[in-house]
Image (cartoon, rainbow, N blue to C red; front, side, top):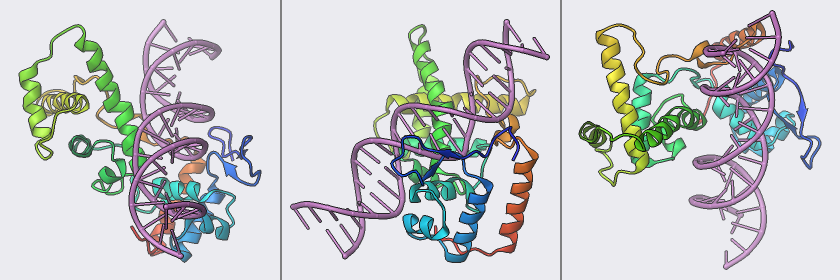
Amino acid sequence: MDGKRPYFLTSCSHSVDPEVRKGPWTMEEDLILINYIANHGEGIWNSLAKSAGLKRTGKSCRLRWLNYLRPDVRRGNITPEEQMLILQLHAKWGNRWSKIAKHLPGRTDNEIKNFWRTRIQKYINKQDENHHHQQQDDTQLMTTCKQVSQASSSQMSTTTTAASSYLNAFDNHHHHHQANSPQQLFPYPLEPYPNGGIIMPDDLNDSMWNNMEEFWSINAVSTHY
DNA sequence: AACGTGTCCAACCGCCTGGTA
DNA sequence: CTACCAGGCGGTTGGACACGT
């Protein structure tokens, strides 16, 4: 283990059970969980954690598996298409992240929630601030809103309106981006994050993921979702 | 180069809901 | 009806990294 992103053991100081581990998962724990599910499939998470010999709660195991270790999970850049889909589905269903995630193969509810909170929410807040100082271009905005919330045809919430504004800005950016230069018009990054959106700071993690890719290519694991 | 600040995201907690015995 | 459990969700935290000064 190196010190850059330490796979340290953080036994929870306020946990009742001193045997229960918390914090970042170690490579060993990941492999135990992967191997166990490969051999036995998913099951009742609490008993799975015990049977596998992991000193984790079932909930923690489930979260780790669903959000990170699943073979089909996609980490990293939300594509423009996915961004549009998220906006449309959120306009339809609100904060039903798992429901939205079902329509984005490989994406997790946690990732979509994080995306929404860090990107859309930020944009919405900025819109709210600007609202005090200037009038919106309502005509253009409403046109986009109608497109976005077409499926729901419900009332247009503040969030939906602001999210539609985001989508509008998104469209403008991409049209400009495609037609002209790679000039950045949009206030927030729509293209890949720094580091490709994945925190993979060290060679150790690189080798781990190489191993995991190899693992999944070898093992035909039956998963049930 | 060093420091401060902001951003992203994995992971957690607490609460809620739905299913089932 | 009640109790229990698994899963879902919102809110939050803390570490790593990027960026500005």
